[in-house]
Length: 171
Image 1 (cartoon, one colour):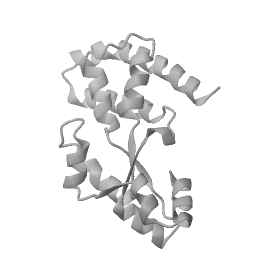
Image 2 (image 1 turned 135 degrees about the horizontal axis):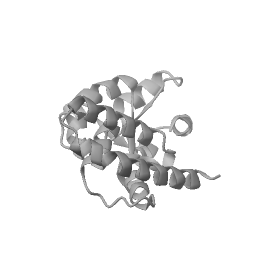
Image 3 (image 1 turned 60 degrees about the vertical axis):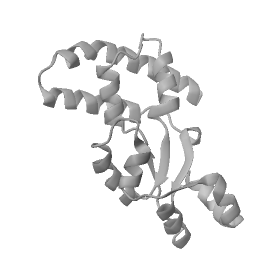
């Protein structure tokens, strides 16, 4: 099974799961229950296939610096749309999910799956800040976290080919 086929099948399953739990979510007066369901759907989003095609070509300057000093440095994929907030949106809004997986797959490719490469420390810092930002306003969240982003394409002009080769393995 290809990655694309796996994504399609999982989007179908997740759309149908959301369809079943959405009425309960919207009728619930318990913030604890809602938070729990958001976590479950957010985790399901995390388990959708991901790959380099979802990277938006942005990397933090700190991640570049740390990787230069230590090629073993781990980089973290920070989803620009936090999974729990994406889950809340799927559960509370009418986004046209019909069980076919088509809408969710499109949302995943264009929003939910998109990530930036940062250090693990920057990722932890972002988690706190992103909770207070309007959904979709990820640029402001990075600015508030004082994370400067580079475009990968610009790195070709600034870095040597060995570093670029090592960096590509980390994506």
